[in-house]
Each structure stands twice: as C-alpha cells, then as structure tokens.
Amino acid sequence: MRRMSWFCVVACLVSLTSLPARAQTPPVPLAHLSGYLRAMARQAPGQVALDVIDLASGYSTGYDASASMPAASTIKIPVMVEVFRQLQAGRFDLGRRVTLRNSDKDWGSGELCDAPAGRSYPVSDLLAKMIDNSDNTATNMLIRLVGRHNINASMYALGLRHTVLANDIRSDGYGIRYDLRSSPQDLAQLLSGMAHQRLVDEWSSAQMIAILSGQEHNTLIPEPLPPDLAIAHKTGTLHDTLNDVGIVYADNAPYVIAVMTTDLPTLSAGRRFIRGVSRLAYREMAALADWRTAAGVDVDTDVKSAVGPLSPDVAVWVNGTN
Image (cartoon, rainbow, N blue to C red):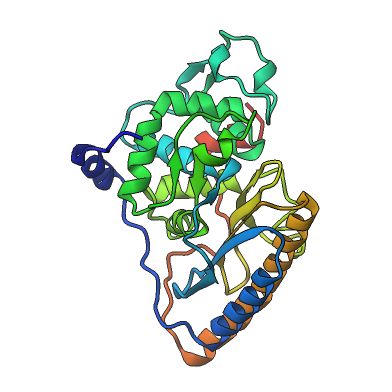
C-alpha cells in the first residue's frame, strides 16, 4: 500500500469531523457484560472479536476489539463514508451518473453484475445497492469514483488503524480475506460518529444512518431483538466469515455493536454466536441505562432516540420510488 502523504491526511482531517472519545472506567453493569462476553468468546467457534459502545455515556466493552479481521461487506461502510465526504466537499452530487464497466463486475453479491456494460447509474442508486443489497459491483463503481487511496486516507485520518481497502471487491479466491480488513473497534467508531451526527456533517450522518436502516439482510444482530426496534446495520459474509455491525436504538439505551467472526467451522455456528451476543448486549445495555438513571450520570444529548427521517432528495431513492 502506498504511503499516505501528510497532505492527504490533513485534507481528510479538515473535511471529516473527529469521532467521539470513549469513556474510561466502565461501571458495574458494563463490567458484567464484559465478563459474559469473554466467557462467550472463549467458547466461540473460530476467531471472534467484538465491541459494544453505550452511545449515551461513551462507556464501552468488548473482546479483542482491535483485532484485524476480514471485513467482508462491512468494508462498504468506509466506502459510503468517503462518498459522503466527497459529496460534502462538492466534488459531485447524488445525481452524478457512473458508467458500469466490465472491470467493475463481481458476481459474489448483488444483481448489477448482470447489467450490460455502458449503462450508467446515479450515485444515489449505487449507494442503496451497495448497502441495502450488498451489491459488490455497485461498490466497485463507487470505489472507482472516489478513489481507493482516498478511502484509506480518510479512515486513517479518523484514527482507524486496522481498516484497509487494498483492492476492489473480488469475491473469487482467498485474496478478499486479506484485501479487505477492519476491526470491531474501527467500525464501532465510525458508527458512533454517525449516531452522534459528527461524521462528515450532521446531514451526512443522518443520511448514512437512514441508508443502513434499510439493510435487507437481518438474520444476525436484529434476529433475537424486538421486531419493531430501529436498527441501522451492515452485514458481511465470506465462506468462513460472518460479521454484523450496527446501531441499535433501544429505548433510553442506544448502543453500537460490532461482532466479527472468521475461521468458522460453519456459517450456522457464526450465526448462533452473533445472535447470542446481540441478545446479551441488548439485555445488559438496558441494565446500564437503569444504572445511568439511578446514578445521575451525565449523558450526550445528540443521539437520536430513533432513526430520523430521510431528507426529501434521499428518501425518493431509498424508498424505491424513483
């Protein structure tokens, strides 16, 4: 990977706001969660890493949260962040059309790979396909638009040290395990920044959350939780890897959760593990909310209690009415 110039890093720092700092010395309820998670991780199939952040207080816990893991399709969150960074900088708008090339096509996920080369699509449509349908070809088109080096530079400027996009999305072979890397801590930081409306800017954060809330693959983190609960998340799957990272808007206890698993004997084993972590985190974060109330702990007020409405120019294509 090329060495990033200080100019690139500084440019990203100017246009991307800082991410929220984490609180130190977690309280007793989170200490309980930490113990439970460690016990689960020791019995987990394959290699696992996870991170949980209470958005109201900044308290966090996890297991091996800074471990570099195969990102799979969760790498599409950093791609989306860079798209919105360049939108905010005025380099293009949501209506900018990108022409499909044969070199963009990947048949691992999504339907755009079957479209004829030469057809063009607006950035808005590609964002929806990349996140909600996890379309690899749409992702490659957006990577080409914003520049892979710019994505990496932006993530580095935000302090993400384990997030690297070393190639386009190429699902054939084992290269994807090493070309797309991140950690639960890195991805949780991005999602925390969105939830606090500080990632790129307030409008961009709100729109990215709205897009993530349209996720169509909901068999992991959302599966054991109440069906009416607002969750903005992104999954990632390889032949032996299963990830899910998201913002859970639980009443009085909004939190970020990032669970990454790899070297799994079966994907079913990974599904059971992620669902178990999700169920446990939901229960213990509710207990933490009760503790915060009883202890009178000051909390941030810039986290919305539910996923907010899309702005009109974005709602049209996310809701499929274009």
